[in-house]
Image (cartoon, rainbow, N blue to C red):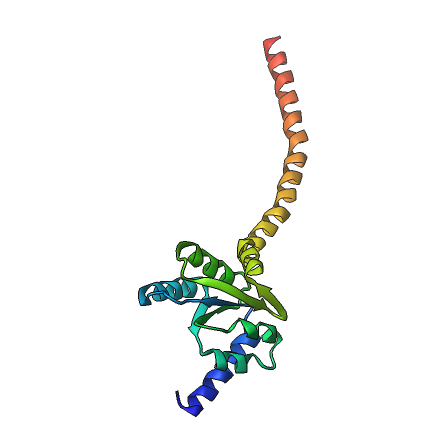
Length: 172
């Protein structure tokens, strides 16, 4: 890489660290090209991105961001997974790490919070933002359904009583 390319890459990476909902740093030593492409495809499908960056350039890009505390994670062959939704990058990285033992999640950051490997694992088990929205909508819709059922119940009971009296009158 030429000096201008490095400057541009550091600027781009700095913007990623500032704008991303979460960033996961993982060691990828021993992963084949096909496996790396598979990880990138899965991450892209979920709405995230995977990048391999030189550690020195990543540390420079971290300077001046809220995620600066994770600079010590950049040692050896590391990759960066990030997404705007804070749940996507940890979820996809941990799912991939379950099936491929060569990918070792080292930690990451979510805003100003630096995460270790256990925190990333915990974050991966939480539901995504869309799942939380769906659950919230379900909780909000349930009381309305129950209210409609309760309001309709007396009317249906009255109708049954009238029907019983009508049958009784017809029989008499």
